[in-house]
Image (cartoon, rainbow, N blue to C red; front, side):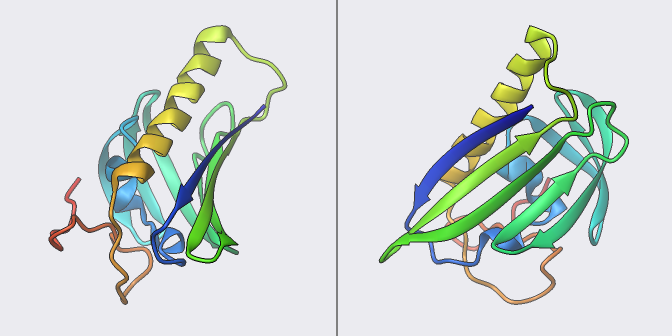
Length: 146
């Protein structure tokens, strides 16, 4: 199954690819906390429980996977220039099943809605440094601590 959400953003292009594992709770309310994050590997606690998470930089964004999830859940957050001064962000989530129980599908829909709301309300700041480090900053420059 596939799930999509879209967001038109006026934020500077390139910030989506800097999202790291430490940023997940700030971007998505369905991710309660990061239990550990070391580069592109970590452990999170989310609406489905405790999972190992992996991060991979991809063209135009980032992919996160839950490698030990029984449904092989993975999601990408990518951006493309839509018009002058506007960027289109796509949130794409997949599982390895064509169908699933209604309550699980509903939880994925909630996960996607939480991503959309999280990305809508945050103000990224262009910054250098390790792309796997937390790049999300509050409007006054404070790092978001999970």
